[in-house]
Image: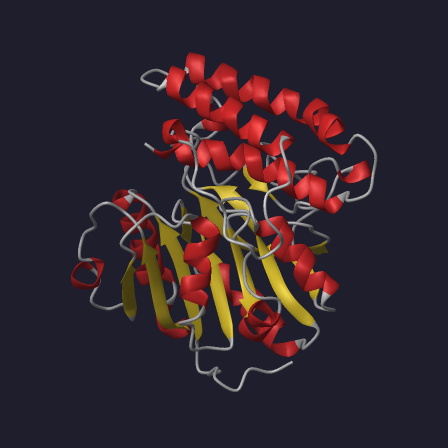
Amino acid sequence: MTDGMASTAGISVLTVTHDRPERVRRLLASLERAAGGRIAQLLIVDDSASAPDYASEFPALPLEHVRLPVRQFISRAKNVGLAKVRNDLVLFIDDDNVVGPESFARAVPYLRGDPRLGAILPAVLYARRPDLVWVYATPFRPGRWGFELVGRDRPRSAELEGRFLPTDALPNAAFVRTSAARAVGGFDESLPVNSSAEFCRALKSAGWEVRADTGSFVYHDVEPPGTPGYWAAHASDRARVYYEMRDWFVFQRRLRAGERAVRWRALAHALPFVATTELAYWIRPGTDRGGLTVSLLRGVAAGLGRLPGRAGASAPAPPEAARR
């Protein structure tokens, strides 16, 4: 379980982005402040229509800006970056997060010290309300119809922090052993947006341990509770909305292959999410309500249709209404 190409001198950090330069700048500024000499390589995989010269703006960071000529979506972009990672550990972090010194202090030594560990999920707090939890861990709910978002929107808990908890998905950020990520083939590109649970499942199936560490923290740079429709603030991109919905159905149908009436049971479990997301479109000012609604419903229809592709296969292009 070693990777001969990797260095132990530092870690790689990898983020992927599409048309969100201000969020990327906030992430890079936090890495510059907090990470010190821990980062040996910083990869930005970027399929934006246009992008700033981040390397010039942040000359102190070991930054490699990988531009993709067309939109690839999250899973494919992560795999492009993974192929370029040169260190034994890599932090995959979404562009709408920031870090602090405590983001690295526990997770990296634990991964280096335990060869059974394939990945660690740090706890996630709200960047603008660090007294509130975005999530501590994401284990499956009973029956595996979705995930238990441990601590979501609650004050920080001394009883839950400083522990290792089980998790079945790796949202927002994850410290990952590079050799483990490569051994399972990286991220499943047939799930263009929501592949973190499938990636976690692949690591566990290959014999790696995956844990949530509530003593390590990253900070989600999104609207905190209290803003109308805050729970769907990220859902303003038609193509992403389409795949967010479709991917969940595809994952559930794959997870439950052979069970009866899976698609209709999945629909019943998805309806509360669909309803609350649609509500957010209508109460958030300036939202593209019509276009997002169409994309959401098309994602549901695609997920209910023929099971698309196989694990590891590239995803089909989204319909025109979702692509814009």
